[in-house]
Length: 112
Image 1 (cartoon, helix red, strand yellow):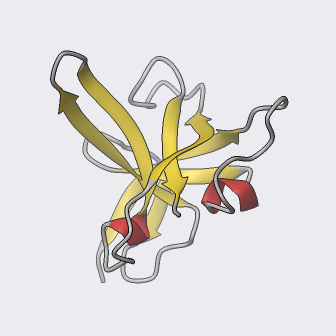
Image 2 (image 1 turned 90 degrees about the horizontal axis):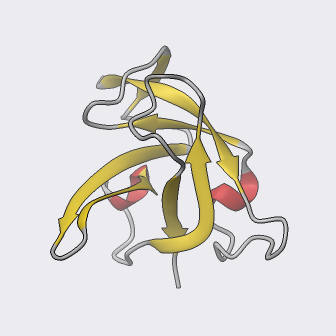
């Protein structure tokens, strides 16, 4: 059984636009758990049977832009789907000092 530690985060949605995630994970939850390289926290996640509201931190280096952080549902990385995720308008954040960024991170949980 593979277990990792994660950080509890809040999900933020736009009050003006509503949810644009096409019924993504962020449309159904107000809180989530963030896991990934450099993320530590008190929450324990079983990767063999993770809750739906667990997100993986993805770090990319985009040419002419620099480092880009976003979060994706685990099923995109552990046996899921064939379709890719895109930004659906929602973000995650916590004031916990262990959060890997100084501002909210976009969640890519929209599939079409």
